[in-house]
Length: 133
Image 1 (cartoon, rainbow, N blue to C red):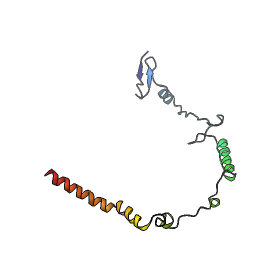
Image 2 (tube, rainbow, N blue to C red; image 1 turned 135 degrees about the horizontal axis):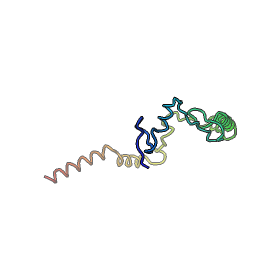
Image 3 (spheres, one colour; image 1 turned 180 degrees about the horizontal axis):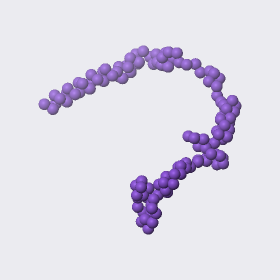
Image 4 (cartoon, rainbow, N blue to C red; image 1 turned 60 degrees about the horizontal axis):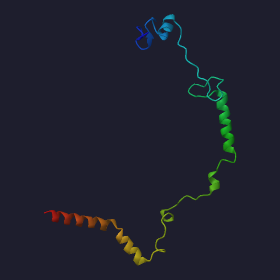
């Protein structure tokens, strides 16, 4: 028993002994296309709402449960946290002057200076070019 394409629609496969596919037979008889009804995934008893996977009853029940949880103790109110927003960058940057003496701070800053590092790299590149020649 070999499968061949339906001679009418040339989309669906049928066995050699069948004349047309089930869809073409239905269309030729004038029957409307039946859409499969999806059942609710929660209760599996009522048809699901269009575009959803749950029925109306289960959807209402889930929304009611969500509202109860929001009103319960599990909800954290932002006002109860009393966290003040940062008003300026001064509050974020720690004061370094108190921890490190001024002289040492200048030495660290000069060691970490990007300008000086760029100058040093440029000097090294020039030395490497001079050595290559």
